[in-house]
Image (cartoon, rainbow, N blue to C red; front, side):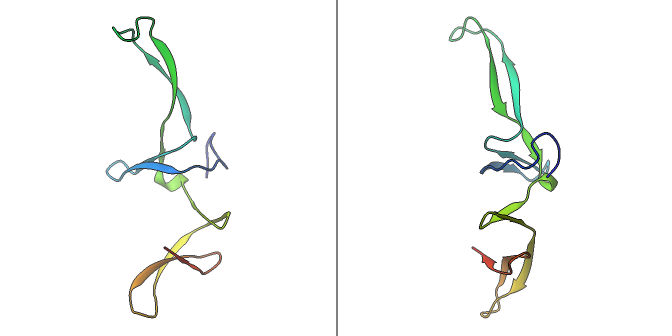
Length: 90
């Protein structure tokens, strides 16, 4: 939602609930310097995804960015729904 990666789309790979951060595929790419080792005697500079705060992530439903709400369905169970379209999210 904000920062250099604003507007980019990707699949959430991991979520760290303790730090409120997530790693999203192809978003927030950083360069990591790797020290030389026996398998990699030259060392290198790798590009990898860095964590993004959960407040900067929104859900895509039918290619539309939407907020999420919770409500009871017909069976009385709590389900998530897209606030923009009103449809249930599985």
